[in-house]
Image 1: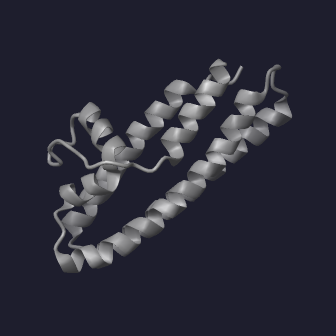
Image 2: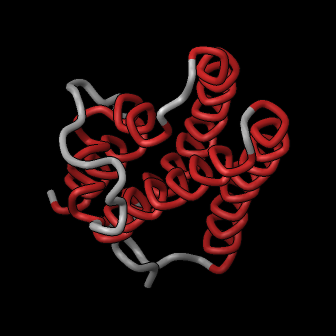
Length: 158
């Protein structure tokens, strides 16, 4: 039951789409609990309020944002499959299984890093550098909150 719950928490945290409007001050992203609450409510609305984009900037930004989120979702799906295998494994892991699991998790991380690097290059051309850096920093904080929530729910490899 615990394993199924952990898999469910991981899947929801990694793949769920937010549904309501964000509340709170977007300028105060140092309060990680407030950030967690805001992104669970509506990540896109929170990002919009934190960036305060002009219409011209928004037109350029949102297509880049959506493409990046699709890439991150692909990495999350790969990571989720690997973790679900781990959680579903009821006996001690073989060395080969552990090696493959580590490779899959690293591959998912690499997909995400490549996507973030491509996003950075595009954002620096599409937005003023301060706004581009602000979004990249905000996205890093969001990913950190999500990664912590996932890590807290997944058992350590034995």
